[in-house]
Amino acid sequence: MTSLQHPANKPSTAETERAPGKYRILLLEDDEQLAELIVRFLSERHCSVTYAANGREFMKAVHHKDYDLIIADVVLPDASGFKLLEQFRSQLSCPLIFLSALSSVDDQVTGLQLGANDYLVKPVDPHLLWAKIEAQLRTTQSPMPATASMKFGPLSVDLVSRQALVHDQLLPLTTNEFDLLQIFAEQPARLLSREYLFRRVIGREFDGLDRVIDMRVSRLRKKLDAIADGVAIQSIRGRGYSLNTVHGAP
Image (cartoon, rainbow, N blue to C red):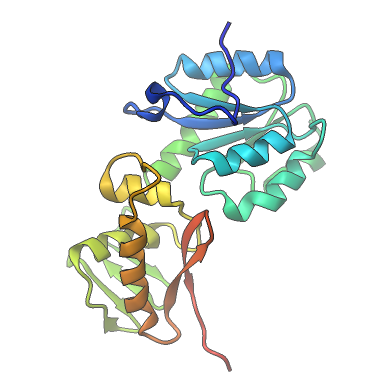
């Protein structure tokens, strides 16, 4: 029987070395038998699954490491999945799918309005669950736009000339700074974790010690801050960074 990885346990070397196509999923489910089945099914598809049986364990797991996707029950012994999503949505940089026995239209609408990316009603065919997971991860892990340019407020990013302008003023960016700004511009106003940025920029897993992303963000932030009423990189302590528009006082 597949053993569940408790959030408090440190992952093994095999789990931290991410194979191509391998997804890291956080499962919040108080029914341990159902959780065992989901973990086994996802593990067979080369996923690394962290299991939380209640709200307290979920909160520890969210701070323990970065995830590609979260599957969450709604009715828990010590919390409401809706309340947890409402509390942590701004800190999550990955999609969340509710998997619940609550089947009313009102419950489904509530979950989606709170920011969930999908809502599945139990019992659900595991192959449908997997299709939903892949659909979400195709979207979030392939953010490259189809067009050759991007706009976000006063920011314009041209992917062909590799130039960026704010209020038509050219930003003097290095190659590394442009690459980082492009990642932010692909997903504006969304919280991007340090782990996610590290994988996109460096191409390997974050070891928890390397500060190269923080240094590059700091340099890019200074150049953006030099232009008033433009865009700025804002940070949420311990969670990551997001690109937002800024406006001066009236």
